Image 1 (cartoon, protein in one colour):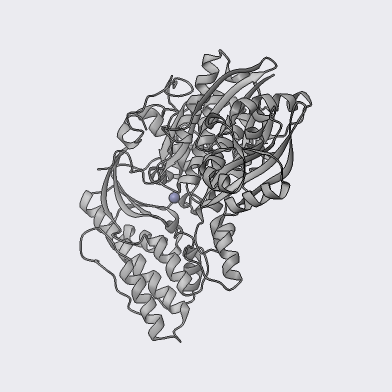
Image 2 (cartoon, rainbow over the protein chains, first blue to last red):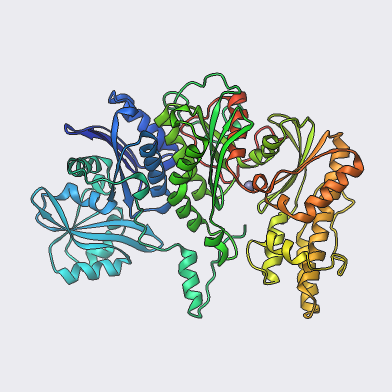
Length: 242
Length: 362
Ligand SMILES: [Zn+2]
């Protein structure tokens, strides 16, 4: 079965296609035009260069976040529509799982950290296990101090990966003796997405397109402000006018 | 929008591969277009045959999600679009009773609108085009509103004057031919729908403001308060910000005033200006018809006075049904059919454009 992987949770657009032979083709770019402009031609390009007809795709895998909302929705909308049109199932996977998986041969605890902007991070912790990684701290949204606190609380030797880890490298280093993964591993990629999805597809562990749920980990600002206001405080940012 | 490629400001970036999923076949009365609309707070999909025949039209509105905030919250809108778009598209296809492989092209709003909301529709639409190997065509949301009239009255003759009034825009447009427009006048400040929302919120009538004012005004006296009609005898532009301020000042000075009378007098002032300007515009260009479009076109007083004015002037009036006034995807599919015929497919590296100008507008 051929699997198309789509990943747009960070500034990167990543598309890969593969199956039981592993990853057969891949496109990745993290600067230039924006997600929506790049993604559709990228899918077309990868399939054409790997000599695969779109109709041969048997499953669409997608990064469901956490990540930058607008970007990750571009990938989710594109992936869900593609699966719907091709009448094939889907597998959704977290951006944090995709960051951790390529580091599975490390003997350290892996902290996968995606930059959430606005001074916040999305992160989760993993332990290497035979054949992959296992989550030991569930995905959450917090500040760099929260992250440092959570790493300290575990007390493990830690390997940090992700654009969020690189952004706050100095702050993290000031408090902890952590190692940092290479820059080219700092964004989730569609290659591990296809590889991990293939293993799950063998178990038919998939869902229908309308069952794919984005992992936002953060409410819309208006909702946060609304509940704040409900508690009697004031806020500056309201909804925009129609 | 390839023909008027300047309208799709994709810059000089490289165009990869073929311009779209497939070369467009002849665009004729057999061409079945799937339209998708996600520019604001309605998620919509529709199938339209030959540019005029609506085979299905499904609209899922988010109005309840935004009501407590008194306006559309972009992030909430984008999340909701992503949640419901697949089922909305599926339902439009089922209701049309056609196999999905029968669809000849995918049309989608690419602007103007909320960027995050637009991107959900555009990304999905391009995927559908890719998967089914059919052309993708980007549509301007306001041009689609102009085409809503043709779906219900294909006999409309050019030149037409269209009064496009919605929450985001208020303009008078001369439609000289398909794809050829001239901007005759527009609001210099608030859009009419925006004025309705703000006054409704001020009067505590709730959201959305248009229907709320309409209901309240029905019980009030439209002549109770002589609110100003700004720039009434002055060109074809309109202004509503002074009127909105006058309403607020009046209510502050007369706290016991009946909100029914305020709503009725405010609505009368807005409608008065819109109708007079439309009438003058139609006379100026020798229009064969005068058309209402956009969400505010559902306002009952505006519809009534618009018809009366056209009758008095002996000019053909067209009032779309309320479903066609508000955002829907049938109008997107119709406009897409015309654009596909005149300009061909839109490249698949197309994004979304929050401030897109109407192509062919002078
Ligand atoms: Zn509209």
